[in-house]
Amino acid sequence: MKTDDVLELLLYLALLIGLAPFIGRYLAWVFQVERPLPGEKLMAGDTSRSMNWPQYLKALLLFHGIGFVVLMLLQMLQAKLPGNPQSLANVPFPLALNTAISFLTNTNWQAYSGEATMSYLTQMLGLGVQNFLSAATGMAVAAALVRGLGERPSRSSSGQVGVSPADSPCDRDGREPSLRPGRSFSGLGNFWRDVSRATIYVLLPLSILLSLVLVQQGVPQTFDVFASATTLEGSAQVIPLGPAASQIAIKQLGTNGGGFFGVNSAHPFENPTRLSNFLQCFAILALAAGFPFMFGRMTGHRRHGWCLFATMLVLLLTGLGAALWAEHQSNPSLGVLTMLEGKETRFGIADSALWATATTAASNGSVNAMHDSLMPLSGLVALVNMLLGEIIFGGVGSGLYGMIMFVVLTVFLAGLMVGRTPEYLGKRIEAREVICAAVAVILPSLVVLIGTALSVLSEAGRASLTNAGPHAFSEALYAWASAANNNGSAFGGLNANTPFYNYGLSFAMLVGRFGVIVPTLMLAGRMAQKRIAEPGPGTFPTDGGLFIVLLLGVILIVGGLTFLPALTLGPIVEHMLMNNGRTF
Image (cartoon, rainbow, N blue to C red; front, side, top):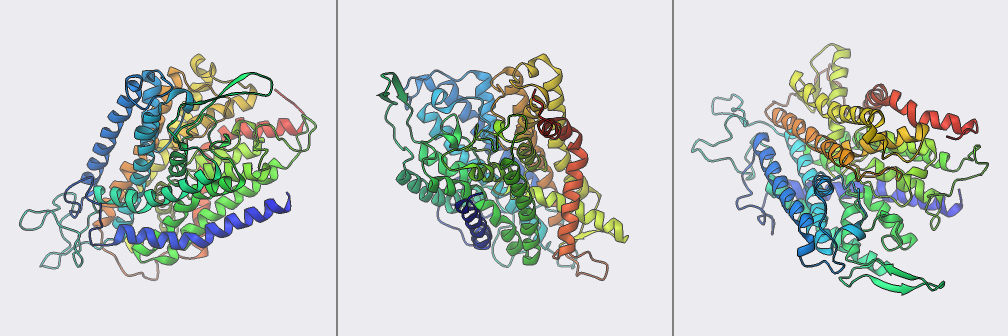
């Protein structure tokens, strides 16, 4: 690598590590401060009432149901709506359904080219708004889980632990308990308040700031019609424009990833300079990296928060190192030193490898190079990052609660090894908590494997594959891994705008989002009811190096046992064939 590439990578990591504790501190303040904040009642009247987990989930599903209807109407009626200077047609139902579910679930999988399919109004009022709200939902669920793990259940006047909030979350006068200081209630907070605060006090101000910087760097933010130009050869060319900067800012900060233009951040209008490239790539992980520290502050276990951050960082650095090494190796089958095809030649191979690692470590999915052109081992890194459950920092909020599912499994296994009931943050982990964690880990994995099998066995699935051999298998595996883990990136050779993939990947995205949120909230509700016991001689510490090693082992073993056969059929075989000079 060149010296400037090394310096840029070091600056990136230094900023990520240095700013994460401060971001986590601010996030903890946003979700923990008791007094009402201005604007937090925009989505609901009384946001002071705490919810148990079924109430929290009901509000979340209602919120997403309304958003789904709005998104569908905007797409299917856009030809008759304003804000459509290019007179684009209505979006067909299968594609509209896939897109609506994609943006609701923070996946932002795009089986279309934005500038040729979506009007300005659809992009802004539909997709842009959901970029904020889907990200805020992930942050809200993470805050609810943290409260459940750190909550001390209330006691009755007789000294007994109070009734379960899932059964009767009411005061003696029949009213729901509030979040006033000094009250101890085993609830998870208020969904409407959490979403409002995440949007108004975190995502919106940062997005405004970043979008202004992007406009200064040359990203368009206009409502004008597409520009027409004549090339040096005398040919006519249409140059797409639009309100791009505002959507690009939130797509990165909210780990959404949906591009305003078809080729995403590889488009020179989305990503015009090296500074814009660095800022967008850093924004992918910036907020997500703060959540372990938010967790530590809100639960009072700051060292444990550092352990979660260290675990994520080790996985990120391992993947980044492997991707950088792979992309700087020669390809014996083609006789070239490095593969520039599909890479971001303006910024260099190192930036392409960094972006590919960061965007798949988070549930972002934006790209500044074509992942279909990655070396086999770099493609393996991107796949593994997603298949582990998007927990290497992951999405804003979703990365934290995904990691906590693995933590619960790790603590459970540690308890079995020492022969006592496992505890986490002073609360017992029992059978139902382990089931919740296992379901959250297994469901997306099950969808990935079944979906990939259907893609390669069915005629409808194979018809969209444009490659052959193990790379074609990787193409299908990547699509299902991306959808089921709410990432949204793709190996660019797959034609995903078909009924098979529109409907199939829609189902995968729903399972990947709500199949994890439901058991997460259920676990949070159960943990909120448990007493916090003082640590004893048999308590397994979760704030040291041994815990980090054990957690890494559980993550890699679970991922390895689940996906190693599939990965062997795809990128691993492709790498071996490449080294033997064979093509397919």
